[in-house]
Image (cartoon, rainbow, N blue to C red):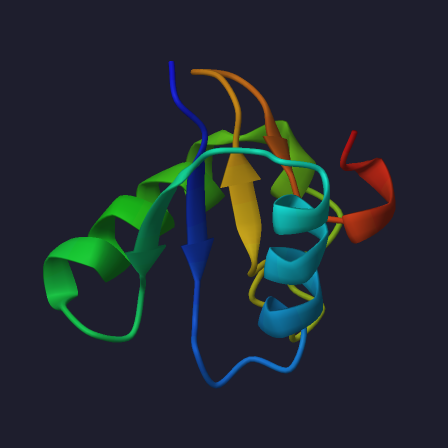
Length: 82
């Protein structure tokens, strides 16, 4: 599975996250969640089902950027990129 990056262009965390992905040479697909309802629905499914979001739900956080690396795992923090 090719990693999928869910992001919002207007999110201040997006640019450094993408820079780190590029620095590490990680090839990924991009899904901008604010450009279409289809993209937003895809992201909301990820947010509703992946355990990595448990700590941010209810804390006024969205959880983007989010790099989905498998059908059960995603990376939300730049420090966890390898």
